[in-house]
Amino acid sequence: MRHALILAAVLASAARAGNVVYEHPALKTRLTVHTVDGAAAPDAVSYEGPKGFFLVTSAELRGIERYDGWANVVYDVRALTADGFLHRENPYGDAEVCSFAQDACVAAVENTIGELLGRGKQEAPDEFAARVAGLRRRAAAARSTWRSYETEAASFSNAILDKAALDAAEAPLAEAAAAIDAARAERVTGEFRAASAAPTAGEPSPKADFYWRQGRALDDAAAKLSRADATLASARTPAY
Image 1 (cartoon, helix red, strand yellow):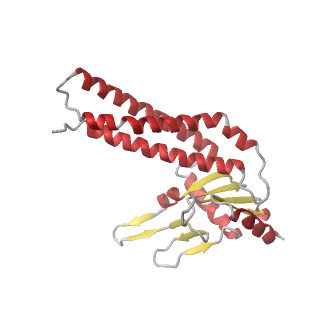
Image 2 (cartoon, helix red, strand yellow):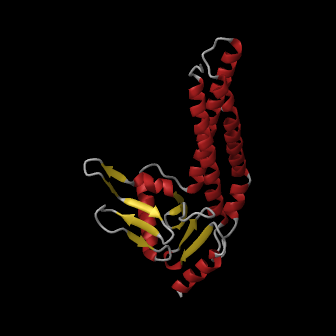
Image 3 (tube, helix red, strand yellow):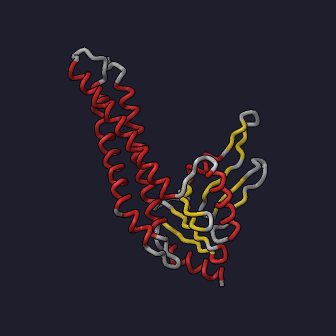
């Protein structure tokens, strides 16, 4: 019966791109595998179970890997694949892939969460709040730098600034700030709505979908900020 429930959950959600749910009733756990439309592999998995509620991304899994420069090998590789959760502790051994539908996969995800907790990992709501606050501080600092450079360029005709680079930083700064402010607004509206809505069998819980999509929006905002920071840094280089 348990496996029938898992299969039903997979079939019910397989037609909908973006999220596939794997129910594990015996473990009181639900895994939601998130995949960007058209992508060959998932980019995150949401875990809802006895350990709490976490969103684990592919980027975090890559951060666990250890590289031995002497032997030129990579240890403890973990990844989300189309077939399940991959784990290869020994670089010379075979990679093990457990299907998301298997109970063993829940244990693998829980072990990974435990390791990430030691690196400062937080449950999804706390992580979302911390990222929004951190990115707002970054955006404010970048905006302050941009304004000071603008003032300097306007006040001194011979200022050593690349005005073209300075102007080029304005758009990504504005776009990043808008994305961050939108995510902050979602904390007031969408977050409560998503957290209070009850999931149905085979359907991703609204909060799992919410934090995944908001996490991707914050990733995009962070990338825009990084581009703006790089452009601002180049503005200090004179253009000859």
